[in-house]
Image (cartoon, rainbow, N blue to C red; front, side, top):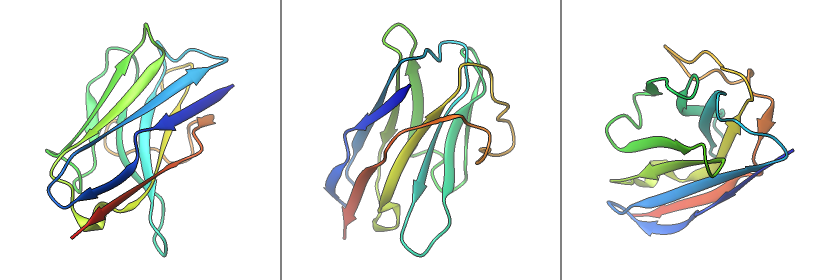
Length: 126
């Protein structure tokens, strides 16, 4: 069971990045998915999530309107499109997913996901 992220890097403020997270060893076509980030000196922050395959996405206020979570069940891959990036978005970004629905309505549940990626660094320069 593995989640592998890609797409991180260095970008200027106002720029965009697209993160991908490919699953192997399991499928999340009907499961919950989410993206988190962790910056040095801060707590891990849930950014966006979807409860199940046909659920509506939830976004935390800090990324609402700038980030978009999506999934391609046929490819067993999830994505995070990040636009209008700010220096405060600098962090290590993690994907998480389950084979079953993971309730995600009013926040991104930090402890409910069984499978996690290894993290990819995103650095936004001012």
